[in-house]
Structures are given as C-alpha cells and as structure tokens.
Image (tube, rainbow, N blue to C red):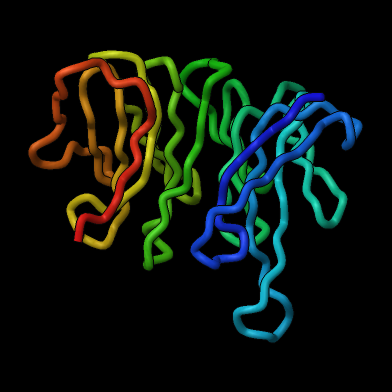
Length: 212
C-alpha cells in the first residue's frame, strides 16, 4: 500500500495530529501529501469541520468531504496549499492553479512546491512557488497580476517557510540552500543582514520559532 502522511493541528487544540491516506483504499493514485482546512459550520462561531485535499497523478485535486474532484491538468498535481476554508492553490510541472486561473511558472519541473503567505491584511496574501532541488523561487500575488522570480546561486533549494522575520506585519519568505539562509519580503527584496552563512551545508527546510 502507498501511504501519504502529514502532520497538522487539525482541531486547534495545540497538539499536532497526523493525517495518513492509503491510495489503494481510495482507488486512485495519489501523489501529493494531504492538506487540511477547517470549514466553518453554519452560524455557530468557532465550530468547524475538516476538509481534506490531495492531488492525484491525473491532474485532479480530490476533496473529502464531499467526495468530489476538480480537474486542472493532464499531468500530475505536485503540491497543494490552503488559501482559506475550501479554497486552495496547486502546482503542476509548469503552472500554478487557483480556481479557474492559471499562472505559468518559468521552468518545467517535477519539484515545484507552493506555500501561501498570509497576514492580518487581506491584500498582503501572496503565494511562493519553489523549485525544490533547483535554484528558483517565484513570488506571485493573490490575483496572479504580479510576480517576481528569484534565482538562488549558492546551492540547491532545500525548502521554503513563511514567517514575519522583521515584525512589520507582513509575512516574509525564508529559504535554505547550500550553506545559506535567505529571507525576502513580499516584494522579493532581501531583508537586512541576510543571507546568513552557516558552517556546514544545510540538509533540510527551515523551521521558524518565536524566541520571545
């Protein structure tokens, strides 16, 4: 059996839960790890139920519940990120997809990962696509009207995280590659005092914690 596994605090009790999906039980071939969004229930404040999203090899995003799917491509869905509630963004080898819109990525790759950068302000939401194992990240605005491509020349990209590094209220992009940690603001400009060089070659994506 093929397993897809993810950890996430599904019920917001501050305890990390695990999500495991077996593709032979679902009767179709999955490729992405599952993502989970909490959908509000009617008029009851704070009451939610989980919705699961995962991509398959035929270009569909599968949704449970309800048991439905959306077709985006004839190639595999590579990665997914929740935007809010029941909305998500996904990548194929050459594009980002959100609702009925598509955004062409600069190169064809089987390793595009996508994350959603949120903050308290609606207009500051944007997306970051990273070619994991390559050297390119792309910042894309919420409505796909603006983008900026950044090339990392000091090693292969290991991963991307989102955090407000400079405490300005907007989420920044944190990238690990080679022996360096990079940070960029939502406009694609490097933050002060970055990149940081570490003694040894990095081996994993960044995890950011508040040191207060």
